[in-house]
Length: 306
Image (cartoon, rainbow, N blue to C red):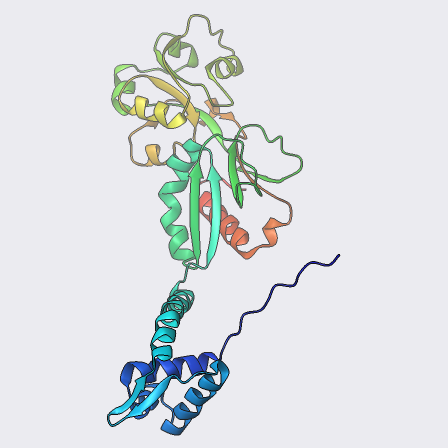
């Protein structure tokens, strides 16, 4: 049993419809012809063709020009709205430069502390791409959530996806200049006597860092514990204690002098914590290539890279 074929609705020529609207609005073939930049004879032929298509008279002649018939008045009201919608959609398509959308999801601290502060450079470099950014620790799916790129924090355990890890990231100890001046330290062991702020989400915590430097970490003084790195950064800025955080996320805090590294680079601990993740084959898309290229340049402005 075959299905019923959907009936195609009759559609007149758009050129004829535009001629009809111009004549109806001006009440004159000559005025309509001038507005359409054609001859009055051409407009007359277009109206005649539309009337033949409909099988109805749309105008009657009067001493002052042409007047809509009752059928013409009803028809004008019916088609004016849809043609206006088409016109607006066409104008938007012509003038809207944001025709390409790039949807990026990011872990919250990277999105807030690193990515968002640099988005304006991407906008100016690629004005034809509209960037949509969301931040959370949710386990999103590319197809289901209409996602192009996911910037994830954690261990790179996504074997079915394309993964580009940000390289040269390190965990370093930081404090505000005022706090460090009041609590000077020169060796990791001295931190045990001071107030520590813990970030629960980081791959490397205080216990691992102390062990890396051969310090037995008994009875360490953790005064605050946060599940977002940006909260730890802000707490450190408020002179609440020492933090162990990513130098990638700390870039702007260090640049502006809000926080300072407590030790030299020999006490930094390497970590591979942030990754750009996307489906295989997506890197061939122009918008993906643009974003990856831009991100690589932004990372190279310091000592990081993909």
